[in-house]
Image 1 (cartoon, each protein chain N blue to C red):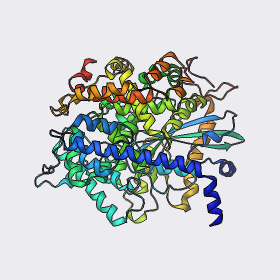
Image 2 (cartoon, helix red, strand yellow):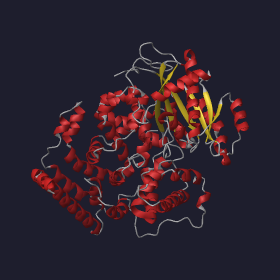
Image 3 (tube, rainbow over the protein chains, first blue to last red):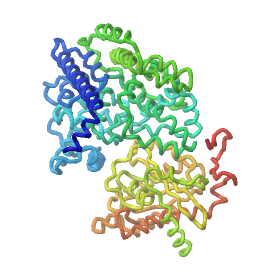
Image 4 (cartoon, each protein chain N blue to C red):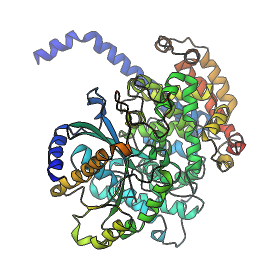
Length: 403
Length: 229
């Protein structure tokens, strides 16, 4: 007791700071929750504001909010009855065996303390959802890793809503991964090196010399990092971000992770095995908020349309099918980009401090330029551009430009 | 051969690396590298076999491998320190079609795996072998066939004589083992060590290496490719 008091006295000032910080944090959080609810309750729903909330610090904060906002981000009416496969025996599906194998082995995706019975029930739900979506959309093909995406939705929004959301996601964001072949997936992976090259050519050259390829990022891309991150909170935070953004954002985020680890990468042996091994072991303590903001920043600086040609060049002779993203309908009339524009420009005028640490290690001019855009400010700018592009990408993102 | 194997097994126990970060703890001296790719249907146990060899135990739980995983272990064979790299591949067909071929590059040996309790995984072998042929430049690359899960005696669907016949047809040695059953631990060990010995004895054929750095030269070495930064 006495020692505790003594300790307490000694720590008074820092405790005070800590409390202020905590109070600050709580106030900010409270404010954000209020803003999210306001956007949800406005008529029509302010989807653009919800996108911004999903991108900005902390994302959508709680699963309860996600249950309300994720459907809006995907333009799914949560009150609609969930999709069904009238009278079909889903277990006859050609994919049943593979799905079963993968779901059975996916124990790590469930909360550690969950009773076995409950987990087994959720695994059954997971199989049902996957088979149902495949049955209803014969153009979609199951891939190992799809189950990692579906389980995230199942755990956050429950079976009924997860079915609707994942079906929408599968015919849009994930569409290219679900082609009969993985050629389009490979094409998207080909964006990775050009993005890295834009920011850090040295790192890019090192990785090219090592001939590391891009498969280390495959599971990141096609599971939206659900397969590789063990803390579920990080997974859903990233899902907030990706649901609000252009479908290529996960590859920008992948690039940001590699760039963040530039020193480690360049310290390791310059061969395929060493670099692949290092990069495929994703650190679990990444500074997610910073990286999210950088990914948004990169997206603004190096829009996918500009990278597309480089990516196509990497692809060499491989021909890609037409992109399947183009029928996306999320850019609904309910969104108000003008409002976002005005709000974000106000944000851009605020003074900026945090770019300093980035500026201290400029490797290239390009990196400086990126930093000058600013991390904190850029999140605003990125959120703006990202929201804008999420509205616009549908007609623009057409891989068939590069036969 | 047997005694040679034994001594090298002992040596290898002392040098078995942990699964992750093994390469980080290896001494700076460059050792020769044997690159082995492990292929076969989904759920036949490729991850468990490679984990067993590299980490010395059966993993608590494994998940579907997406793309290609990499494990490594340093062993000593006849006094020479050698790194065995195992490239563990995804079993689902769609991955191997366009994704995996990059990792066939400079492979020194191939391990085909089937699940002894799953006839379908055995029947897939011809297509794996065919695919492998397409990816590999050299035709004399050592290949072995591994039937996994032999501990599940009551569930065996692929009889040994059938598998042996198949292996003979394709001039591969056959091994039946279990990555899980601890009594067979040495067997998994022996499979990879046998392969390593074979690779070592094939040295002039399979590998060429500059005396000073132990890099295994690519079939068409480009001067700019190697760097030890």
